[in-house]
Image 1 (spheres, rainbow, N blue to C red):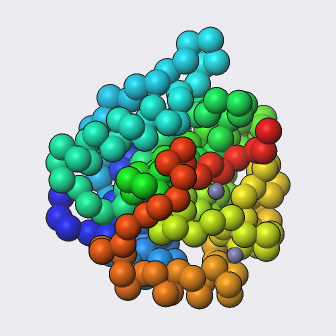
Image 2: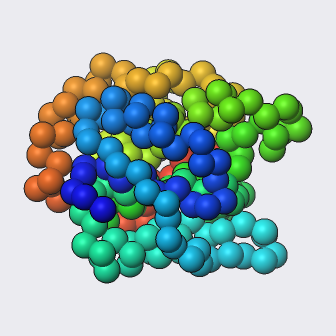
Length: 200
Ligand SMILES: [Zn+2]
Ligand SMILES: [Zn+2]
């Protein structure tokens, strides 16, 4: 893998056809070089009683992989397995700004989860919004109260639908001030990670 600022890894469980348009849009939103690759990770953290993966365990697995291969790019893993963190029924995604790793699950972003006909365009739109949200956390952005902003924390698929593929003026100004120093930046946000999904 070559040096890049954002790396999107695609788990074999996820829809491969969406990765290129997702990466193009993420690159445009952040104005940062974005590369893609198939994830070689053997996922850990499956909880057989919940039938879900522990998102924190997945991020630890991703952190180990990035250290081993000296990957400095902010890394977003896309998978289709349902994910959770303790005390939450599920999350759409989870970011760990302290290490630069994030994960997004497409499972509850698809119409099929809600018994509706699948729509690749709608799934891509939601993946872009959710993926950009987690990358925003990796760049130290917090949650935003503007319902249309990428950094708004969606509690439902309807919230996600209302969001746009853009930051509000305030979040954009913070991003602009930080993007130039991305390589040298240190992160001091809480180590537990920034979640995206329903509030408890
Ligand atoms: Zn905002
Ligand atoms: Zn969030």
